[in-house]
Amino acid sequence: MADEPAQLNIRVPPPIHTWVQRASKRRGLSQKAFIVSLIEEAMDRSKGPSLFGKPEEPPAPSQFDGEMPFRFIDLFSGIGGLRIGLQRVGGHCVFSSEIDSYAQKTYRAWFGEEPAGDIQDFVSGKGIPEHHLLAAGFPCQPFSIAGVSKKNSLGRDHGFKDKAQGTLFFQLAEIIDHKQPEVLLLENVKNLRSHNKGDTWRTIHGRLCDLGYAIFDQTIDAADYVPQHRERIFIVGFRRDIYGDHPPFEFPDPPEGPRPKFRDILEPSAKVPAKYTLSDKLWNYLQDYKKKHAAKGNGFGFGMTDLDGISRTLSARYYKDGAEILIPQKKEGPRRLMPVEAARLMGFPPEYAENQVVSDTRAYKQYGNAVVPLVAEAVAKQIVKVMKWQRVNSPR
Image 1 (cartoon, rainbow, N blue to C red):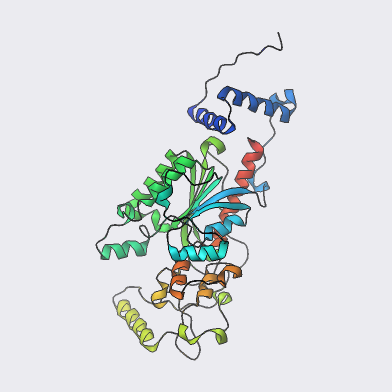
Image 2: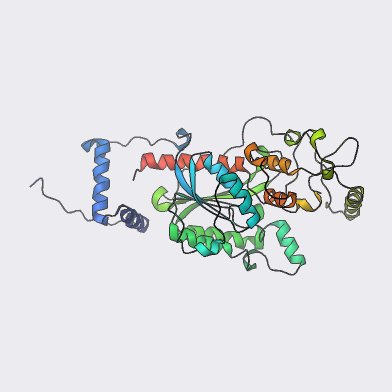
């Protein structure tokens, strides 16, 4: 009889079987009922027999511009650089975590919510809401050039051997394994690739692949977005059981037009308090220090910034002497950035940059460790295009 059910036996590759298992569980259906529902939905969309005709060319991700609502979590959040970028493309933050109490204070003032504390308390995934995207700027000090040099000089371990920070990646991986977000957006220093002769990066990349993600990575210089040379690696992952082995993701091209100039982020000289001008003693010390190293053929020393160019990288140690980014003045010695200028140099919007709730020292540290929101937004826009593309071509 035509109306009687017919039996269909098929064998599928392991990735498809895994996807069916997880997707059917999310819908609360048996695997058989889930597969039947997919076929019925496909027939409805394609008006029956036309399902078996020549398929149309799927839209390219570039066609899907604009915002799209999705839920994300913000781990190792710092002061929210990744969060701002994700919110600008339609993301809604449902959970954040940051262990530093001073960063928590800034985050609370800026976003109106208190981040959870130690991420190690959430390794099992309990207490973390469901979400589409996991964002994390996991600690970079164990892998950064400055961090490695400092720890070598102190005889301390770095990278994964750093028990306080290096192991946090594996705890992040545990959370990913438990929560299985569709998309990952991770950020770290560019030295992550070369640390320990590449073994660190191979370990991280391999672990993310083992968790079921197609991984993309690229080092991006923020100088195309803000007047600062700041290279960071961005890692984007898409679950293969949802997006396939080769999702059509591409990192953003640099913005068109001239690069921003350093002078654009500065306060008028009349508004700069005298305390930001270097003392004669400190200025003389920095000049002597640079001369001493120049005689040895080293490039160590202060950085006098070209006002019509870009600055060096703002680091978390800027509070000590401001040496890497000094601002020339006409009638006296150079000065360091004001915290509000450091915020602008990082690309934080005025509503954040002008709302300083910690000391200057803490503010410099926070900006030196932050993610540039404009870069995060540019990467997030590309992620959203793929998320929209997937939902049009493989609706669930």
